[in-house]
Length: 271
Image: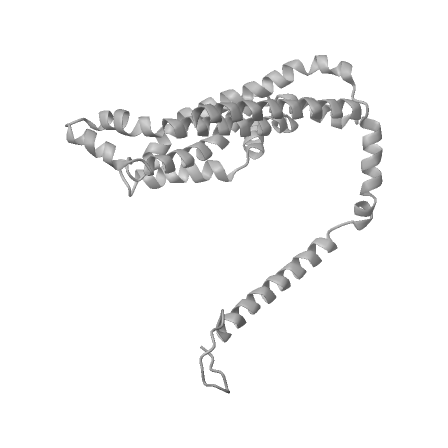
């Protein structure tokens, strides 16, 4: 602590001189990095288009309104495909995420040094790649269509669901597990009666939450050929049919709002 020159009494400061210098150096370094990054971005940006963006946006808005309402008859099947992609993808992901979560949880895994790292690798690898990239890879392998979209959504969702679920497994009340174990129950009986009942509310919440997210993600998979309403959106954009584009965006908005409402109601009933 620094000492006052007049009275010789120690004066309290929030930080020492060294801590203040380190803090200011950190801020200076952050500003320098920001300036360098902004300079690189500015060099790669055509600023004429940026300043002209409001006029272009206004022109597109004029072309897109009013929406082409008669086109809605052709969106029934695509939006149904989108809902199927999200729902089936979520179900497949949950079926695969449950065993992965039990293998990844430290209190249920058969081996902490071999099986658990493999399960964690599966969780990280499936979460680190976006569903659009999975869709592009799957389209190249199995061809375009709804099936590729379902598998892409499923793979992307495995890591998300398994991560939240294995964290819930690790946070269970161990007293219940010990009580059931003390009765001489087998490993499967302990899991069925001591662990599963405790994680069922978390499992249901994770399932509904992920389904809600997948509704949003499945609406854009059609842009890369994975089926659903995104395919209609891509086709309309390619021919600059802006009234159709605005109608498709409205349909997507309504679908997302409905899924959000359903998700909130289900989570509220569970919790």
